[in-house]
Length: 187
Length: 312
Image (cartoon, rainbow over all chains, first blue to last red):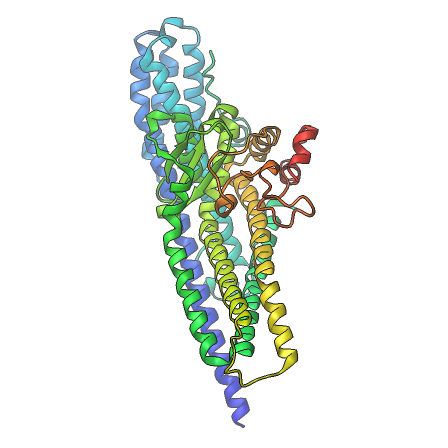
């Protein structure tokens, strides 16, 4: 009789421990996902802040490339206005393309490439591009761990009850993902 | 093996090694009890553990002093700074670690600091000259992987455990020489033999475990680095270049060897075991490159012959 009682008590303690560990693990992962998202936001914001400067600098030399300026400004407006993850990703992809086009245009203006402010912006933008990619990798990795944890037994039994939901991956358009914009600094 | 599998298996093996460490500790405690009975053994163990805690706490500053590094700002080396920043972002660290440069033509790099907040990385001037941007990113991601995986703490702990085990074994040895254990109430000859065997074997076993743990963490850090940069080839190319370079570091000692991306010791220093590689802190570069090749689906030419041999 006492043995059964001891077994029951041990079982309850084990289940309690498991519950605490699972609860904390899920919360930690959810926080990491949130941290990853805000890290992406920080870098996207940094890029958006560089854009007006870039446009001004290029405008001084390439006066009639209005279409390119417009598409960059549009992408920036979208990036700043984006609220959902999909909107952010879409604006991100559009921005990459628009900025890439602008740099391609700048190639045709040697005097622009000689301006120090311009080359500095170019370096900073390509660095920001790398940082966005790094933040995206961190975010997607944590989303994968968080989702896997929620979907596997035994955590899946209580994840929903505790209010956890599957997180969304940060996906760029396929073509943009395969071929990230490379800013050529050697030219 | 895929990346995730490699990471999982490395974690499991780490746990196994730690369990073996504790078994060794238990063994030495048992030896103390057999040789001295409860009281003395306990005192001895307390002294050793106190020494161990001191070593653990003091370890952080010693590493930086040994290597002779000076701190840099972003303007001093933007490429290095950016690669560390990017790796820190990809690793999800909230703060970019401090960055140090060591004036040494031998190419190498290391990470230190027990928690990610207090972590710092160091690179030699040699490695900055040798590697291009992509390769440097791979190396810094490897260092950041050590930080994120808490390897510095783990390896400091391992070094301290080896220290404690060795110290207790030494004390036991001396007291046996000087006819200690007079108050022994347990004069069992078999017990004495087991105790002597434990005294001799435990420190060797502990050192072997430490080195094996260090090698596992290198593989794990390589796999994590590949995940952080999404580019296993960058790190593989860096390792390839490091393998072709044979200059030993000027200021290095055996105690901190496990911290570097590549073993800073060379055969001519007489510190490496030519027989088995069991006492190596790092796996052979060729093996590390092979695993990265498998992850990324690419192939590099073999590391130049002379260099590859010297690695083992």
